[in-house]
Image 1 (cartoon, one colour):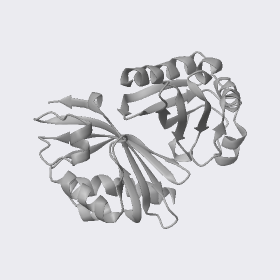
Image 2: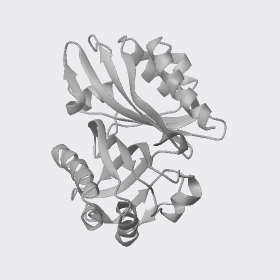
Image 3: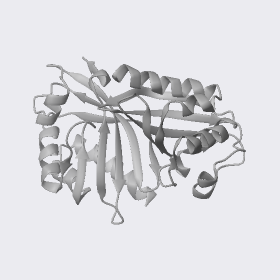
Image 4: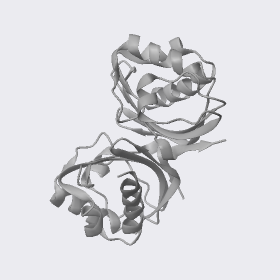
Length: 136
Length: 136
């Protein structure tokens, strides 16, 4: 299970960088929740999650891991940096919560994944806010 | 609030490195929970939390941050490395969950803190496991 959790985190990076929203959604359980960033309303269920990532990958952002994936019980936590030229497709909840720069930026993020017995992600939380954004 | 959350994370590092268990416990709300690592039973309430840190700081471990503290809503997430000569004072729940090396080690960890309105930590979760340990 711990290898599967590490592989899923790697797949998340690879699928995001390949702009494969459906592939990302398939990592999740049907009734999963995604809260990105913490403090905004959770996206509940696969359809909402697919819609969220469909918008997110359109910006052509690149995710680059910072350090090793932490594995604990049925959970994984990992730090990474998002690099994006300009964020033109922004989830409405994010747009309300965080004022994003108009141009390019990097964002330092930490995500947590919780897994069910089938190895699907049931809960994702993303930790980042205004002060984790560096304007380019 | 976001400055306070960053300051609390910095205080957590400083107090741990000063082996000040009472100072760490004072960062927490009276009814806070500490789950370290995720997958072990939570320590509930200030007395249990103080006991946990009293044991933990006895090992003389040093905490060194990896990257910036992520701030999102009422939460903070941060990555760090623990360096310890030999872990002789081990919380019983950790001893059951993770087989620790006899000698020196570093452990890569990610912690999350959730805060209440008074600025106290109500929930701490630590993400690390066997494969985040490097034997020295």
